[in-house]
Length: 330
Image 1 (cartoon, rainbow, N blue to C red):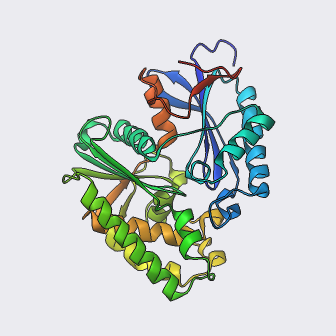
Image 2: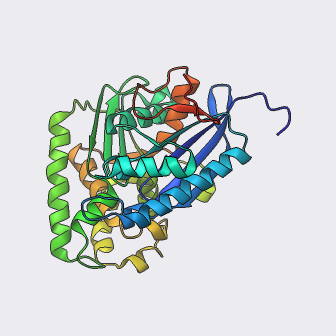
């Protein structure tokens, strides 16, 4: 790495299933990947019914953040942005969890609001697709929340975040069996449909020229319904069509998790929650009258990096850029 002149930046994302570290060199205003590392945490599977993170989950979280810190030192990261998404942000014992992680790893995880996550993911999608996308609708299904945003510029004009994440809904509605009962699936679909009506009523959603979807859930649903595998690279066009997704809801509902993970694109650790993800994806596309979405390989992590590269850090929040020594960076 001798002779390196570009500042090396990293984003550490602690999600409901996986800890993801993205290390980049700032070159020409683009977040060029230098290192990508991830570790499965299975945090969503370890949450108590009320969302509390028990000792086993906290131990796994500490391990993941500690190993990520080692990777950042090896990669000679100059500055980093570390945050946790909804599973930690919404946990009743969040403050204890964040304090324990900091005490044992030296890294203070921040949190972003759902609205900030929607804005930054929208920015990433805008930069990936370019201005030719025109007015753009963004959909993003995470483990804890669903983000929806619409706009004509680099940041959205309207954005919402609702508790419709695939992991959260699986815990709340699909705990009675594997595969779940028909009644549980009906209750889930009814609940999602009602929430999507709120999205349609609360937001200002003009007819977009381009509808785009981010997140692993949408990527896996696209692969499940026939899009190209990820091994073909990020520039391979991929989309998800609503009518193609619809029959898969019934198929997934009748299939146990052990068998779902054998389906194209469905990873083992997302096999249980892919049904909830499919329901949310279908219902939000139906509710907003979207026939198909384009899959964007960039998401929240890239949005955070792009905002910094454009010399406009995220709005003040509970997460900050820090130097490798731990001090905050303006």
